[in-house]
Amino acid sequence: MRKMRLYKREICEPEIIKEILEECEVVRLGCRDAEGMFIIPVNYGYEFSKSEEKMRLTLFIHGAGEGRKADAFTACPDVAVEMDCRHGIITGDYTCSYSYSYRSIMGNGKVRRAADVQEKIYGLTKIMEHMAPEAEIEFSPAMLERTEVFLIDIERFTAKERKAK
Image 1 (tube, rainbow, N blue to C red):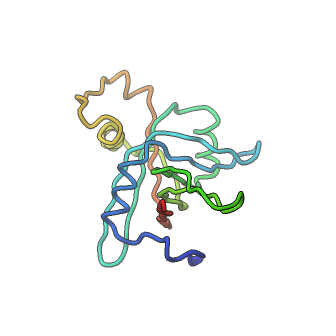
Image 2 (cartoon, one colour; image 1 turned 45 degrees about the vertical axis):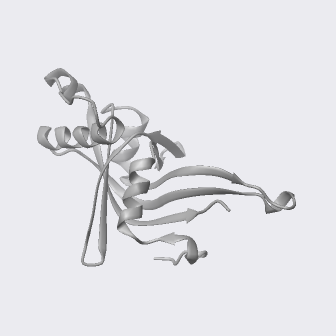
């Protein structure tokens, strides 16, 4: 994997990566289909762990089982992911010295549909825990039938921070 150009901004600490996953509200997915490349902003849930120097990240998203997004995932399961938070303007002494503060995660992974109802419930629960941790979680059979859950197994990712001055 290519090294980050501004390596001093790279975040490698699992605790801070988890903070970013918690703070971000939307993940943007870069996909491709017969019509070309496109970006999908979606809310998400996640599962993150670190074991013996390897970090694992799985994102859970939901939507319809048909349409451009679902068709693209079936045709080409490779996706790019991007999420960011802690936005702020960094002012400068001259026009081109202005910048932006942020934290972000970027990476690549593969999308697959939930294998069964139990995996679908697990994914939807992860989404609700991230989006609305105080909400009571209950899924009706009709809702489970019409909702598709997609898992994105992130194969490679980096986390980065540009701090405000």
